[in-house]
Image (cartoon, rainbow, N blue to C red):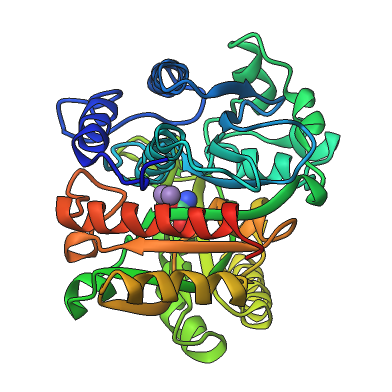
Length: 414
Ligand code: HGY
Ligand code: MN
Ligand code: MN
């Protein structure tokens, strides 16, 4: 047996190869779930997994796995993240966690180390929430129902059922992706921080203690389309003006009902009919709200609903909203937090314990097994954009810490 070590040149080559898949001229990556870019990345991952001598497996939700020492008996230690991106996303969000997992399993396989537990690297389907959010890990954790799957649709109205059928997949098969808690020993996710804390503080790795919860709504304000020239201002039912008033209330609502970790974002707006000389009769927009505390999140949801209702009444508008996803905040397993922190110390890394402002598959996996996360710094905290990047040295340090953590989890009683 040789001492397992990350082959950084190989990992770097994988990061560069994968980041070319789905990249557009704007340098952004377009691998939205069930898009051509996503499909190409999945084919690439399967080819790399099989080339590494790992057993390849795909479940009913389209989650992809590479397995080492799998016997279907012992619980496995799983490391993973996602290959899909937001539109115009960066090269590392999700992808780095999958590639570090793949590299760790290759290094462990090549070392010949004796494993107490089998290992799996996972690439979860639709983490970014084209169809709500964290679909693949929710399937694995048994959190999906036939109605949730049937009702899932993207902001353009395409259903998850249609998108999966286009790939010859039956969306309802995701119900069979459920894994029993007994089949898992622990779950680890390495991810870029996507915020500025580590980079600005000169920290080399982050040890995640808690992961934010969120709710995501698709909101429609409905007024009356009318002529922009002949309709007096006092006689309008202008949906866009309603949206503007709502957006202007966000700071007040966070101030009155939120906390230091509260976030609220309107990321997409669509006005219709959408002509310059027509009063908008409909304003459709997304609302993404986050907090690491469940009670705060619930108070924010109530406050946003009340505000929508009051302004709709005042402006003679109707409103409807569709809950696209609701994900509870979680705390990472204290035992795993300690193992990761100890590993960072043994490696002489400058580490910081911190919460995650982004949602991750790890928070779903925390519902069925002990879960921990390792963060690597994001330069200037940029993410969900082509400016997203992490220094290669930080990637190597994070990958080595992930490898040490997996060895600790898969070879001892840890
Ligand atoms: O939205 C998020 O927090 C994650 O990037 N899906
Ligand atoms: Mn991610
Ligand atoms: Mn993301």
